[in-house]
Amino acid sequence: MATGASQSFSDIKKAIASGQLAPVYILHGEEGYYIDELTARFESLVPESERDFNLYTIYAPETEPDIVAATCRRYPMMADRQVVILKEAQAARADQINRLHAYVANHNKATVLVICFRGAQAKGKDLLAAAKKTGVIFESKKLNDKTIGPAVTSIIRDLGLNIEEKGLSMLRDYIGTDVSKMHNELNKLAMILGKGAMVTPESIERNIGISKDYNNFELVDAIAAKDTAKIFTIINYFRSNPKKNPAILTVAAVFGYFSNLLIVHFTRDKSQASLMGVLDIKWPVQLRRYETGMRNYNAYKTIEIISAIRDFDVKSKGVGSRQSEFDLLHQLMYHIVTAPGRIDI
Image (cartoon, rainbow, N blue to C red; front, side, top):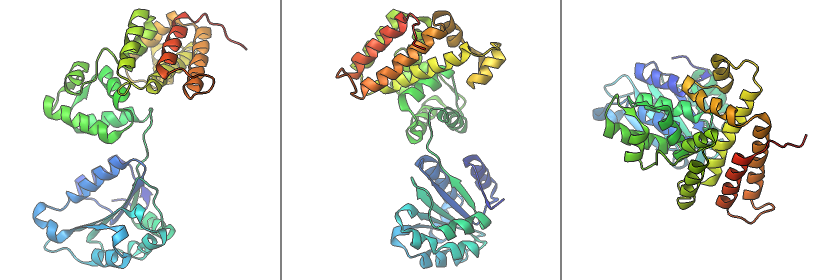
C-alpha cells in the first residue's frame, strides 16, 4: 500500500479489500459517515474469532498515548495482523495526541493503527508530519449540493441497486446532504427491493414516503413548462407539509435551475454535447427541462427571476418583510410565471 499521501474513500476501501494496508491511517473531517464506514471496514479485517486478541478499540480522551503505543507494539496472537482503532481523537488535547508521533514514525509492521478525528480536523503537528511519511491521511469532507449526487450514486452502486434520475433528485431534495440518513434510506430500499433492482419514484414514494408528484423535482419541471396550475398545487402541498418541504430548499432548487438556464442562454454552442458539458450533466434527457425553459423564459426573464429569488432570500430572513416564507414563496412563483423580462442595467 502506498503511503505518504492523502487517499480517497474509494482507494482506502480497495486497500482494505485487497489487504494491501499502510501501518497507520488518520481519518478526519466534518462528514462522519465516511469515517464510520471505514472504521467498520478496518474492524472487519479481524475475524470474529480473533477479536478478543487482535482488535483493540481505544478512546483517546481516556487513554494515555504511551498505553496506545504499547498496545500497537504488541504482536498479534496466532495471526499476521492486529488492528488498533483510536476513537474520539478530536476530544483529546493536541499536545496529548501529538505524543503518538514517535510510534507513527517507528511503527510495528504487524499493526494497523487507525486514528479517528470524527467531525473535526486532525491535530498534532508532529503526528501529522510522521503520518505523511509512513501512513495515509483521509479527510472526510462535508458534502454539498454538487457532491451529494456522485456520493449517492456510489452508495447505490455499492448496495447493488440502480436508480432513475427522478428518483435520485427526489432523494436529494428530501434528505439533502446528510449521507448517513441517505445510506440508511437506501439500505432499507435495498433490503425491500433486492439486489439489482431499479429504484423508481414509485418505490421511493411507497417505501420512504416521499411524494413522487409533489417534490422539488416536479416543481422545477412545472416551472420550466410554465404549468401554473401544477406549480401552485405543489406549493400549496408544501405549505401543508412544511417540515418535509422547507421553503429554503425549494428556492435553492429553483435558483439552481434558473442559474443553469442563464448559462444555457449565453452558451454559443447549443449542441447537446456542449450543453451537457457546461451544465455538467450525464444524460441527454436532463436537457429537456432547459429546452422547455428556453421557450418560456428568455434571457431577460431569467435574469429578472434570479433577481426575484435573491429578493426572496433577503425577505425570508426578515429584512423588509414580516410575511411567512410560504407567503413569500407563493409571491415568488407568481413573479416567475408573470415575469415580463424587465431588468435594470
